[in-house]
Amino acid sequence: MRIPFLDFLKDNLVLFDGAMGTELYNKGVFINSCYDELNLTRPKLIKEIHQAYVEAGADVIESNTYGANRLKLKKHGLEDKIYDINFSGATLARAAAGEDIYVAGSIGPLDERLEPWGPLAESEAREIFIEQAKGLKDGGVDLFILETFSDLHLMQQAIIALKEAYELPIIAQMTISNEGNSLFGTPPEMFSTKMVQWGADVVGVNCSVGPKPMLDTLEKMNKVSEVPLSVMPNAGTPQNVDGRNIYLATADYFAEYTRRFIRSGARIVGGCCGTNPEFIREMRKSIQSIQPRIIIPKPVHIKEEKELKQVVPVCEKSKFAAKICKKEFVTSVEIVPPRGANAEKAIETARLLKEAGVDAINIPDGPRALSRMGASYLSMMIQQQAGIESILHIACRDRNLLGMVGDLLGAYAAGIKNVLLVTGDPPKMGTYPDATAVFDVDSIGLTNVVSSLNSGQDLGGNPIEHATGFFSGVGVNPGAIDLDYEIKRFEWKVKAGAEYAITQPVFDNQLFFDFMKRIEHLDIPIIAGVWPLVSVRNAEFMNNEVPGASVPDEVMKKMYASKSKEEARETGLEIARQTIRDLKPYIAGVQVSMPFGQIKYPLELLKEV
Image (cartoon, rainbow, N blue to C red; front, side, top):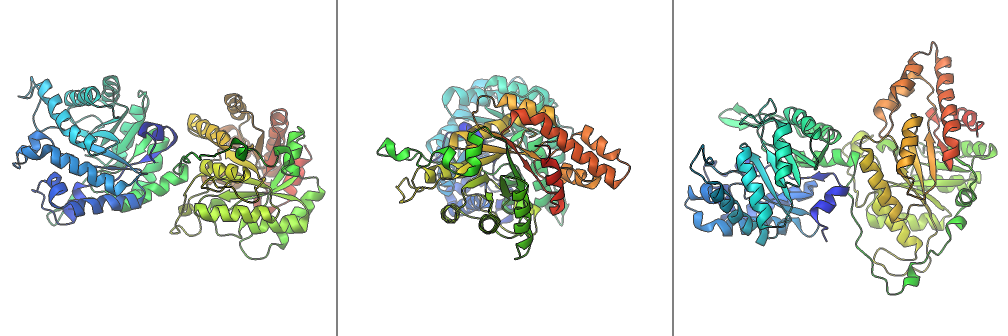
C-alpha cells in the first residue's frame, strides 16, 4: 500500500518514467494524431508503455494526458471528451502501476497566451486546468505534474487553480533554453522561487534540452529553492536523420548524469523526449548506487503484546555485544573473502588477530560488487576454525527477501550472532556489470526484518518456533554529501531496531565530531571505521573509487608530501593512529580495514588501543 507521495519523497530519491510521445511515435503513431485520444482508442498500447516503465524500475509513471485540455482537444474535435480522456489516462496508468507505484497526472501548458498578451483570461485558464484535473483525480492519480511550461504567468494560474480545487501534491516544471532561462527569458532563480511562493510542493525543469544545460540550471535552483527539486531532460537535442528526429544521448550517459543531478540537489529524476525504458533502467541502477528504494514495511498486527518482547537480551547476544554493554572498547578487523574457494589464508589471519586481542572479524558481503566467496560461509569457517566471533555483513543486492530470511535463519543456526546490515554496492561497479540486482528492501527494511526474527515472528507476523538473537548493526557515513539525508536514514535504521553502527572510514576528525553532535539524540554505540593509508595510490583510490569514502585535502597533501613509499606508509599509519587517539573517548570501538590483505597494518594500529 502506498504511503502519501510527499512522505515517500522525504525518505527516497524518486525516479519518474521517460517519454510517452516519442515512444508512441516510435511505435508507428503518426505525429499529427491526437496522442491523448489513444487512451480511448488504443488503451492496450498506452498500458504496455506504462508497464514497460514500471518494469524498468520507475517509482512514478505519468498519465498520457499532457495535451488533454479543452483548447488542444478542440483542434481534434474532441472537446466533448475532456473528462473521458483524462479519466481513462489516469485509470490506465493506475492499472499498470498497481498498488506500490505512484501515478502523476500530466498537465501541459495551453496553446493560447494570457491577457494582456493574448485572448485568454486568467480565470478562464484556471477553469481549463481544473476541468482537466478533475478527470485525473477521479481516475486515481496520486499527484499532479505541471510540465514543459515556458510562460511563468500561465504556470501561476495552473498552480493556484489546482491548489484551490484539489488537495494533491503539485510538481511544477518549467522548460528552458540552453542558457538555462525559461523560453521567455526568466532566470531559474526567479521562476523556482515564484513557483514555491504560489504553492508548488516540488519545482523543477524538463524537456527542450539535454542533461548538461539541465544540470547547470539545477545547480542555480538549488541555491534558492526551499522545496525538493526535480529534473527530467530530453535525450539530448534531436538531430534530423533521413527526415526523422533522432535523439542521440545514450542510456549510459543519462545514468552518469543521474548521479550528478542527485549530487547537485535533485530529489526527483526522470526522462523526457527521446528517453525510453532502457534509460529508466540505467537511471535506476545509478540511484541504487546512491540510495536504493526504501520499502517501508507494512505494520504487523500482533494479538498479544508479549509476542513482541525481546527473546534474547541485547547484552547476552554475543561476546561482542556483552563487551559493548560493559562500555569496554571493542576492536574488529575486516577480512575480505577470497576470490577463489580456498579460505586457509583468511582463517590463519583470523587466528593471528585473535591472538593479538581483536574481538571480532568483519566479513563484507560482495564488497564493490566483486565476485568472491560467500560471506556467510567464510564467517562460519572463521568462527569454527579460528575461534573468534565474526560480524557477518548481509547485503540486500543479491537475494530477494525470502532468500535473505533463509540465509539469516541458517547463519544463526550455524552460530553467527553478529550481523551488519547493508544495502550493498550496485553490480554495475563490479566484476559483472550486467548482473542484475534485487534490492527487495534496503538496509532499513532488512533491519526491520531482523528485528521481527529476533522477536520470534516471520515476515507475515506469524510466530516462529525459535527466535533469533542477532546483535544487529548498520552502516553510517559521517562524510555523506547530503548529511541531513544520511542522518534521516540513520534515524530510520535505529527506529527499525539497529543496536550498533559502524561508520565508513574516518579521515576527517572534525567532520566526525560534527556528525556525533547531530546524532546525540540516538542512544546507539558507534564503532568508527579506520583505514590506514599505506601509499599515495591507496589514498587516491580511497578518495575516488570507494563509495562513501572521502579523504580531505589536508590528508592528501600529507600523503603527497611523502618522499618515499616507506615515508608514505608511515605517514598514513600515523594519520590513522591519531584518528584513533582523537576518537577513542567518543566511540564504542574501532573497525580497522586491512589494505591489500596485509595483517601488519591493523596489528600496528591496534597497539594504539
